[in-house]
Image (cartoon, rainbow, N blue to C red; front, side, top):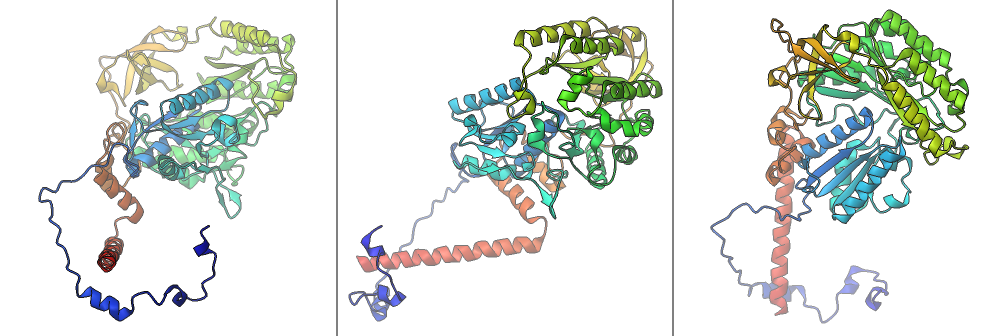
Length: 575
């Protein structure tokens, strides 16, 4: 530190020396100041910020999401908030200024893709913000050092993190949301969002779970169970239908555990939601573990028989061996799983039961695996997610004695062969079905619809079908689908109560802001539009609030002019 700063000044007058000009000297000097008039440029045009500008809301952002529908919903919320603030959400990673990578920690391959994307972004000199379960569960991993992170319960602050990252700062928000010490489900459900599919709304009904599965890394990220209130969820569903949605997916780490922390349960929520679903629109229930659905089998059967609810349930079994289930700490036995499936098959004719199986869990013997093969042979699940076991760092299962890699691969292959040995839809050729058309197939050759059992039905790619309930005739089947043609005499029905939002349009914005954001998904907004949106979100519609804002701006302007005059006087006096 310079020596001039070492001495202590007792009074501000100590800063004035005898050689300094006195007040009357400065007054006389002012009389000799001749103000200069600057020539104004008559051709005034609005200047656009440079391409490398750090003005918030002028950059393009690419968002990549891996994993479950809960993660997809988080990605949609983050995209909506960024677009509402003025950022341009792009589908082109090359054109983006910043990559927002929303990760999944369930399996090692998903994390490998995430890690490789970070490396690629750094090689291409892109700004990076990380989200999802990987950085939330293990934020101190070496490859995450120095990078900005937005936690799974902090997605409502994504704009702050992106803004600071663009400025060159590293920000990490990983805390839990609480109300009077009680953990909340996460960010508010009424935040702006950009639906990947404008016809489908994904609603997270709770976050976290009550289990402690020895293989699960997601628990490290999502934590204990925290449910949203029924009122919040019903309001979100109503808003979605007002925006043209015709299908709702309920998601969480375990939908069956919903409400146990707030004194309610899943059937109570579902009956409330059914009341607000328009005719022809559909609700799909997400994954539920066997222990928590056992208590509600009677009510769940009634709900799954409702015409506005898909007769579909995803119930992961993971293994048909009780000893393996015990090592996994799954909190049920195979008899419990069979009881759930048998009951629902009897009470909900035609129901689709989807399940998951892990091959090669530590300690799994040949006899254990044969029990799993028998289960699949017996029930012939139409939808089966087969996963080779990958030990996840920090989990108890990672410390167990592992099954050799070649054995895991062989078991995975054997189970896959069994699954592909039967065709679940062959008997449906010639059936007439009502299907709801909501998507385009991956090969872009068909539109994708679902019947009341949430079975995939491919229909001709006619734009008139999209978002409609159509009666079709099944003429061909495959392992994972049926093909159908519309009946000539049938009438299409539109379940949406209003026109759906455009692709990329922000949900949840006030009406006057929508015109500014309508094309934000694929085009870069003008900086003036972005600033208007920012002001609207910050100040609302109140005229009095805007008057205060203009008053503050005027005061700042006067203060800057005053400083400018002082600088001119100082320069003249020095000369």
